[in-house]
Length: 246
Image (cartoon, rainbow, N blue to C red; front, side, top):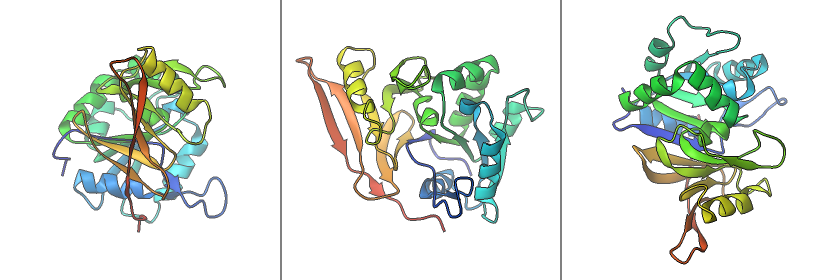
């Protein structure tokens, strides 16, 4: 059953509980939330990982994480060529599309080369729940702060723009993030922006931010805006704490 409204879950969260090492991940509670939003207990969920060039090890982690769960996992690779015959049909058949982190600049460029923005927009309007972490969060917005161009963060303003805001990820864990987002909003490079600490996600219905959620205590989301006097304001948004994925 598709989501009742176009839905995006943009996050600085995802997998959790690495039990026996970095390649042994477990789905975090954000995936249960997305299944709930999609209206199904057995969701078809597709992974898009072009932000790191479709690394094979990432797909191994993906399938391992969902093995033995009710989730019916698949992936869409674009390197060196698409792994499915009909990209549009495959993505429209999903309940959830999850986009991994990495380079948001490369992600959006590759998607545009393959016509993904139009296909994903159709999915969004059709009720497929879209989401992702880091680059997979920024991409749905107008832009944000990125390390796509090197270790010193820079502005990225070429996102898909369906969500008419800037987006800041890893807000509490990388020291360049908060001051750069304040500067980009203050000088007008980005409009009002929604930012997330690690472990926090933003739930949008259409283009409305309806709530923030978290997979741990003590973290938050933030709205960063420029006031009439030109000063930058930061408003804390308290998230709803999600329960662990069973």
